[in-house]
Image (cartoon, rainbow, N blue to C red; front, side, top):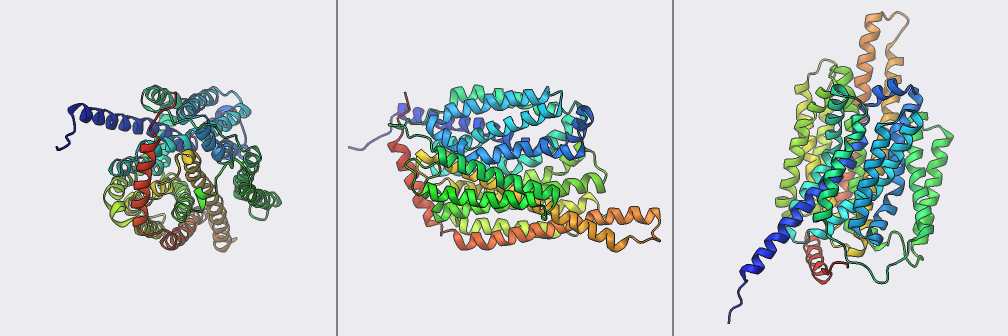
Length: 509
């Protein structure tokens, strides 16, 4: 007798599929809020400085406070989502992030603004890995998983550029405080949707305890790492404080790894990171973060300072890149990744990014927007090709108990990469600017000549940053091509993920 699927079963599957896509929309809103907040405030800084009266030296702390809290607490946030339940962690992260945003929007002093930004970073460190963990454990069917990670990867890659566009519009049309309080609307929508559509994770019994020594070691190590690079960006690489914190970071992170090998309930179970494909994915995300954050920064400088664009025009200038990123993300995850695997796809994306960087180096003071359009489109294609593939592979086949901490490693890689890239590229660009001015300014230089030389020096410094970004991506292409396994590994991991999901489908009470 043949077996037939009942109409009731079909309708149940349709409801489950629809629910999953609503879940994707929910975590997508949260991820966009966290990612764009790393850049949306940058454009508002001059207005905030004029309003609150803090110095140029203090200005960087509005950005650094967020990145320090976010980067140092990501692994803790990912592990907490595994321990207390992903839905609970997601809701707490949304409420905390919104509340911190309100405090920042109402800030009447520099200290209050910096404290609010640090709180945003802390709750973002809980929210970001939880959002990715929810996605990882919700989408286990290969075709749906590819589509979902294509959307999520596009959000992760385009969030910075969207932040520039939104920040420019809010600052120019309303008030700098809206760059913070706008998060309340994102969080409110995501909170309501999460109550309905984000499933409860299976509760572990007995629930493992939190690794307190490991938490202290890795949080202090990541804090020292991010802070060391931020000091290097401000004070230069010869600063004792820069090298002191970077050295401390190395010691603390080595101690953390040693402790994880013996801890009864490790914060970061080492099988999560020693897997070859996941390690390659984390390194790819780190390299992409290093190159991407620097490019956003220097192309923004070029648009505003060289081409004379307003904040809104600057944001609009990035739109072609965002469009290509979204298109490439869908094509790569739905068509190319299942056929080619990350071993081919990620290096291709890296090579495209190298090409974009080389084209950026050709921009000068006489260039127009059309000259920047081609590299922007190529860069969007590169990001959409490699980011979703790396993120999906980083969380593929991981034990559901460790989905949160594996997701946190993705965010940690991107955050640390962004900190390294921003500090290195800023330092290199500043050195190039100084050297150019020293070589071209003389006692006989007229005022008009000095103005032109200063403009040329700025563009020369941007080109230096692009060359180094090209080097980052070239190294990433080589490393990813060597480390990633062939595509049959991804197929096996997807099958394992589906079997794991089927055996772990009973929700917590």
